[in-house]
Image (tube, rainbow, N blue to C red; front, side, top):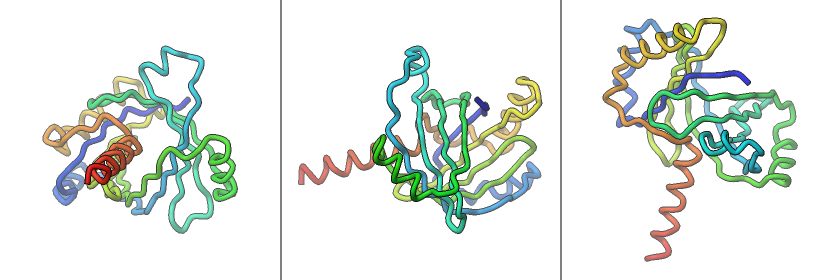
Length: 192
């Protein structure tokens, strides 16, 4: 599987990052609206992995694009920089494939977001506005031929330049946050 070093944090506003991205010499690549449909993942046979990393499977659809991406990943729920292992596959018939996965596995939740993608060398910087959750910044330093030390140094350089020590780190996936919000809203409406 491919590997990233990742960090995610919630912010009051993403506006403060634009000047810092300029200081970093990061390049804006695109702004897109994504819909991630998360599916239930059957328990794996490797208990050591399942106890430290929750496996996740999602179909990512991007507005205006005819294809989608099926993404499977394993990442520990930690609020510090952590490794994520993943596999992805281009899906040429997203709606048919989504119906198939829905029938076979069931939909766990859906996450909708606007994402600005910025790049600094091998680090993807995501400025995300997630429906019903708020604003987040996410780093993904991709391992693409550099040494692990070089990847860690680059990741730390981006975190330091963007002053991410002043943000609120997030340990879980957007899917977990959406499900927590839905559960809270359901409990409040039951009490009322």
